[in-house]
Structure formats: structure tokens, C-alpha cells
Image (tube, rainbow, N blue to C red; front, side, top):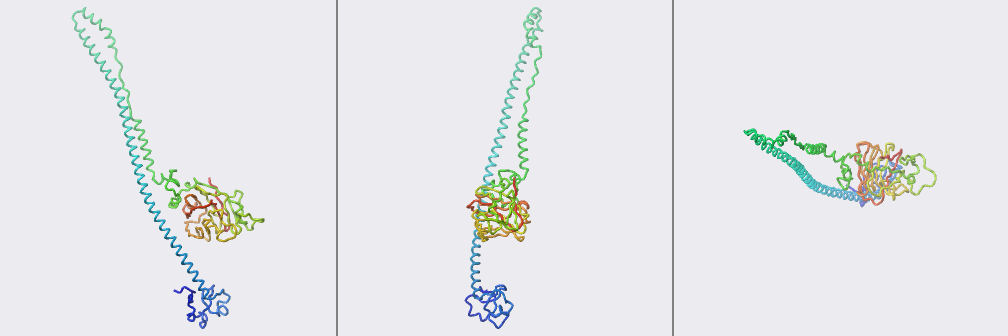
Length: 439
């Protein structure tokens, strides 16, 4: 297909222009281009024809311009292709790292479960040893008691034999003498001895202890593993990865409580907001007004765009804040920016999300976009969010957005190496936007 003017010859084909006739004046050669209708026309069309009053240019000049635009498009497409190839490489590298991490995690778990089994085996041996030791101590006592009873039986047998011989003695004098000699011992032994009641020893406390331990473990493992990990505070945000943003993005609906550990309530800076914006007394709500403020504008103020930065900035750590946009009308911008964002004019250098100094989510005319450095990504939330959650992990280079009213569904994650402190940033089209006060 020709790379020049639609409906006309491309650059370098002027010698063949005689074959291109005006669709309205067939006897005339096309030599002009109607910018409104996007058609090649003859010299009579803008004077007498249907293109009268339309913006007109020379066809060859327009063809040169179109070729330049096409080349720029090809260059941009090549750059975008390189980015997508780089994305695939990064995804593949991340997948390989994930596989290696999964294998190392399973190896680590196998070692820990081996340790756990050894610990249980050792605990079993100690419990059995405890029972054996106490059993032997009790049996030793029982043996001593039995030996004492045996000694008493021997004494009784000996005395019984002597008393029996006394009863068999025919001589009265000798019988009396023998009885008198053993009378005291007979009286002592005729008193009944104490009945022996060995102290019983029970190992029920040991059994009860380990039964409770088993029931506790059974109660724990009956709960699904993912629920236990979610409830375990050690697994929140930092437990699975040094890059929590990856976990938050993978999980379609993470618990809001995970983020509230890092809750912040940034207040807005009145010196940065456009003259048509009004700030609430608590500096959490900004609203559009019909008229601007009188007086000199602070140097930090956005003079052309209805934008405002927060007073609070974040230069390290993890932070989470929420923005209420249900009164923002047809359009809003929610994001974060460096203090170096331009304040004068309405060029891309000053627009939130259109430069390297800012990142944002934008809603306008029922469309949702993620913007940074002039690059945009179309978003498709399930519902129109009334409140956005913004999570920042400064060191990990994560800036994530969530639909709070939609069950914390993930909207978009920016990844960057932050070079300056980040300020929460807002831009309005109409209505009002509020920073939510979090606990």
C-alpha cells in the first residue's frame, strides 16, 4: 500500500500525480489535502466545492508529514516490542526463580519435618523413660515392703514352732519354764500387725498431657493451611517473599487487615493546591470551587491543574492509605509524586502520571487507566470503586492500588526504583476527594 497521502500518491510520486483525479471535479488533478475530511482534492474544492472553508494543505507537504508520523509510529512500535520482549524475559526469569524457590522451600520443609519427627521421637523416649524410672522406684518400695513382710513371716514361723513344742512338753515344770521364757515374745506377736496398703502409682497425668498435645495439633491441622497462614502474623506481607508486592498482586483479594498494619492518614498541603480547590479543616478533603483565590500564589502551588500534594512524604518502609472518590464526579486522579513535579503550566511535566516524577490511577468518562511517564495501561475493574487503597513498599519499589469497596480486588501495581521521597497526590475534575482517616 502507498505510504503517502490517503487517496493520493506517496512522496516522490509527483510525476504520476496526473493519474489522480479529484472525486468531485473529475477533470481536475488533485493537488491539495482537506484536513477535516481527510481527502485529496483539487484547487477548486476549497473555493467552489464541498470543502469550502475547510483547513487545506498541499498534498505533497501532507504526504511528507504523514511519512514522518509513520516512521515515528514504527520507531515507537519497535520500542514497545522491545519492552514486551523484556517483559517476557523478566517473567521467565521470575518463573525460574519461583521454581527454584519452591524446591528450596520444600527441601527446607522436609528438613523441618524431619527435625519435628526426631523431636517427637525424643519426646516419646523421654516420656517412656520417665514412666520406667518412676515404675522402678515404686517397685523398689514394693519389694522392700514385701521383704519386711517375709521377715515377719519367718519370725512367726519360728515362734509357732517353739510354742508348739511347749504344748507338747509332758513335764509341767519344764512347760512352765519354757512358757515363761517365751511369754513376752508371744504377747508381742499375738498383736495383729498393720495391714499393708502400697501407695498406687498412676501415669494418667503423663497420658493426659500428651493427649492434650495431640488434640491441640489435631485442632490446628484440621484448619485449612491457607487459613492458618493468613492468621499467622509472621506470614503477613513479609513472610513469603522479600517482595510483598508480588504476593499482594498474585492474591486477587488479600485481607484488608494485612494492609492496616501499615496504615497512614496523610494530610494535604494547602500551599500546593490549585487556587480553585478548597481544603477541609482537618486537611483530609479537597473540593472544587467555582472561583479561584485572590492574592499571590505560593511558589509550590499548581497554577494550571487542579492538583494537590500531601504534606506527609514517605522515603522508606511500607505505607498504606485510602482515598474516597465517591464524590469526585466524572473524573479523578489518585497517585503519588516526587516534590520535583513541575507546578507551573499544564504540560506533561506537571500532569500527574505523565512524567517520571509521578504515578497515578485515572478515571474519566467511565474509563480507568494507570499512568506513569506518559505510558498508560487500560484497567477493567469489576465495579466502579468508591474507595481506593494505596500500598507503598519503598525499598521494594512497589506502588499498588486496590478497590477497597470491591473486596480489596487488585487494580494495578507500578514497579520502580524510587529516587526521592513520595508524596500522596490527587487531581480533580469536579466534586471532592477525601483521604480516609485510618486507625
